[in-house]
Each structure stands twice: as C-alpha cells, then as structure tokens.
Image (cartoon, rainbow, N blue to C red):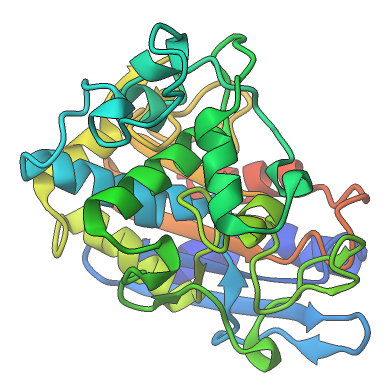
Length: 333
C-alpha cells in the first residue's frame, strides 16, 4: 500500500481533533523505507494573539524528540567510536558530578542507564526555578543531592547526557550541529506556536517551550526544531541505515530494560503508537504534541506533529487518544 493511501485512512482522527477545537493544527506524515512518502496539513500554526495557518514548511518545537533525534544517536556514535563506554559511569566524562560525596548513587549511574531511563532520578524537576544563569544551573544539576526513587522516565537522564556531550565536544549544545534539516530555534513567522507562558510573559513561538531547556540555554532533553520533511528524512535514514551507522540503529532498537531501548520506547498495552504495530517498532513523543514511530518489520515510519499546548497545556487536547487512533489506522492492514 502506498504512503498516500496509508495517510488517507489515518488522517481522519487529526481532522476531527481540529474540527472539535481540541488542537489548533497539525501535520501527519508517512514514509516508507523505499522513499515513498506523503504528508497532509490542517489547521492553524498559531491562534493567539493572531491566527496563522499551518503549512508543510511550519517548524515545530520537537520537545523530547530531541532525545532520540539528536542526543541518543550522538551518544551511541561516540560509544561506537570508542570515545565512551556505555556501561561506564557518567563520571568517566563528568568527574565533578556529585564530587563532594564520592560514595553516592549518582556517581555510579551509567550512560546506558540514562539512555534507557533506568535511574532513580525524579521524573520532573523545575530546574528553571533555581536561577537564570545557565552555568549556575549546570552546576546545580551536577551538585544537587537528588532524591532516589523508582526508575521512571526522567528528563534529568538526558540533561546529564547533554552535559556529557558538551564536555566531550567542548561545545555547548546550542553550538553543536543539530543535524540536516534541524535547528535550535525557528523564525516565529514560520513556527508553530506553543504556550502563553506565565513565566516568560508571552506566547512562546520559535523558541524552546521547555522551561528547563530555556533556562539552561540548550540541553540534551529538548530544544530541537524541525519540519515534517526533516523528521521524515531522519526516520527514513533509520529505516534504511543510510547516513546512520547500522550499529547505532541496532542499539536504538535494543531493549535496555522494561519497555525502553537506548533512547526509544517499545510497544506495550496502551502505547502511543496504537495496538497494531509490530514488535519491531520503536517510538517517542514530545510534550508539545509531537511524536515519531518507526516499524522496522513493515519498513514504515509516521510522524504526528501538532501544537496541542497552544495556547495552554491546561486543557484536555485528547493527544493521547489521538496518537493511538492515528497509529491504529496507519497500521490497519
């Protein structure tokens, strides 16, 4: 079946979300390993304080897709090149991490554990409320006595991996090449707006929505911008291992623990990718309303890009059900 036919049947849930006012706008894109692809756009890129239509060229804040498009492949590539050992502790690259207590658990966590969210860090922490100096906040992350809990999905894992990348490259995240078709900001006139942010006192558009990433002025967990074309290009490169090392792709598909691979998530009951994915599927979502899923058995990937937090996150956008409905229709064969 062609990518266009797949998109035609899977577009209806997004169309309904726009029609009922739950999400301002969005783009659905499908790509096959052979290069066949299709995209469709609907709704508005911005509604507050003025309306702008969504276009295929609209730039999206990719939020946590940064973890799997930027940070994960770079960490794995460094391991493949022998620059780091995934099973070594982070202190092999960040020796000053929790340096005043050499026996604590933080100094024992490894790169692999961070990639798979297998650490005791808290799931959410408002780093941005501790100041606005990015160097001070990096020091805070490295020296704060973190409460240990059960292993959960935590941005802190990738904030630390981002600091490791900065140490290894000698460049801050925002000084590093984000990859072809990606950027660390976008022209506000051609970007999907996110939230009317009480902290910044403005509608956020073209700059990162995530408060911690904004305060850190670049991080490994968020901050990447891209278009539907750049996201599908990246997905196709993984499906075909072209421009990406097969070893990197293999580790992205390899389970670390629970339902996590190196960076990505695997299918489970109630998964964002729906119930009809093959077991050879990986996926990831982002808070702003984005997501990317790749089914290696079917040789197909799809991305759903929305601005569901515009103008506020404090609204039931139905994004969780929308993602599953789209995934089920993409894979309804």
